[in-house]
Image (cartoon, rainbow, N blue to C red; front, side):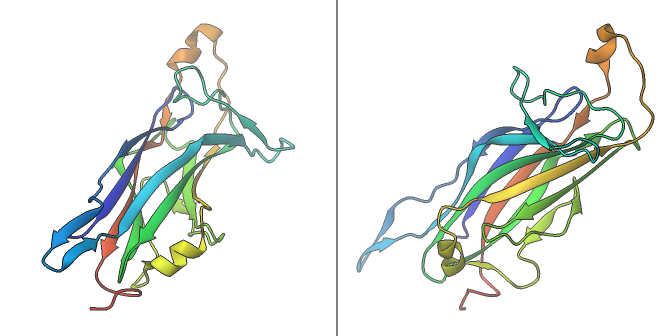
Length: 212
């Protein structure tokens, strides 16, 4: 049996997409009875750390500043205009403990992002490991698996990170002309949604860290 742990981060909002997290747990028990006694299972786990953090990083705004969420808990408390740039970051932690256990991390989408107005919003993301190594910027909605190629996450590597979390960071940039609207029409502004992000940690039985 191969182990898998999944985190789901849903995101939707009126103007900017916030992130509300729901967890799907899959545990495999503390032990299994065998003829020779008890065989202790390993541990492969994912958990969210804290809540999403929105930061305005527009080139003409100094210093960059953090802003919060609206009362619904999923909508960024900011109205975007042309030239704005924002990041939203969510941290998570991996656990990998066992003999001959290796894994890979995949970031994908259960539901596609909706970057509106069309052609006026660009969104990319990076995944930063606990040791500071970051993936290449990738278009939101495009899945990546880390590490790449035949490389894996190993128990020794994950243990060396201790409790330091990973960080998934999305950068959104708004372009196009500003549109003047009356206050009563703000609620009908185009929706920018980051979709539903799925982070999965999967056991593998090939590559670095696994001995057949």
